[in-house]
Length: 282
Length: 281
Image (tube, rainbow over all chains, first blue to last red):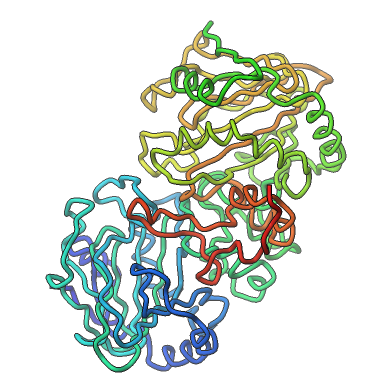
């Protein structure tokens, strides 16, 4: 069973469900108008995106990145309070931080086969993450109704406790069907994969991954959203993109300054050890 | 007192790896040639003269960075000779040998000139792995080097190292007798692992500065200390050799051969496309 929670469910209950299952559907968390606005802003970029080059990427899947820089309407999803509370719980104990790993649309064209079942924490390679230690929280926003035929994400609830390196058959997984605007939250240790799109229309998800801030990001946010672009965006989004140190000393700009100084050279951002940021907008 | 072993300038990468594995650190004498050293120092002089001083705004950070210490990063963009030093094939082989078991590729963690002024106290002993100390690793995630750019004696702040500490439990503290201070004539270089206890030494002189270069490489899937994308932006990186571009992070991290995925996309493609072809090394 995938836990299905209503929009407005307290984040503590979402965390409890994730602890147990490793995945959860929060139904209709985003308004359909928000979804429409995001898709409208991304349309010119999605239209010119080619399909993937290999099976894992999807030979009939178009992945469009740099969403935060291209679609201001996406910001309300990136900073959705319940999602941020969940990410903080799993990724950032006191004194630590998390940031956005990827914010990418995956547009499954009709005929896209099911993705192989995997754990998102495998991305980094063969580093053996301890069981129960989460490095990523991935949120798949349904940009339309997800059903059994159009490629709803297939998940294995409870699989975060399973052995690593399993080769699982997607036919045994459960499809996370849900209405438009729902958020499918999948922990990095939960086995899952995109379903096959057997319908005759595209299936679009906005995949927003959060990760521990000492890890290298899936998208190079500093190139996707360079300082001059970041300067036009709200500070909280810019920090989520990685313009903040990853721990005491990761991600320095220039000779040891806070990365926000690269975005706003006219401001003073002080760099401190431990929790921060210690900043003053002088 | 325990001393680190010293290797001659013409040692092999295997020699460095082997002694490092045994002691946690090793000194290679004459690593940087006099000619290269003179050129590099001439590039650094104006940069250090213009350094505004340590003022991070945090007392804790300032104490660690050093009130009388001048640090320069972004060296690929500021001091061309650094690129030659960074691309030394034995240095890269050493880094890949140590980190390879947990990461298919390496990335530049930092290239930093650390110029310690008179009267600066010693740093506290630390492990460079501690930058990622939440990863629960038992394997080093980084290698680092300290190259002396002037004659560095223990009095001038030669790096303090605890040989063998790469095999210790995290909470074991060394006795004074277990700490050695490196004596590094200009050009000599300390090679050590991320799990070896070390610290910048105290500069007890009244009138001399300790100028050294730290060049470190970490796992390709980790976030480096230095943000090379803002420090060495694409238009500058485009002028560098291909291998330097890759080490700065302008290539995709690719773990597909070991069942993993990719990190570091630009527009869901290889950031290298931003740089044109780069120079052929």
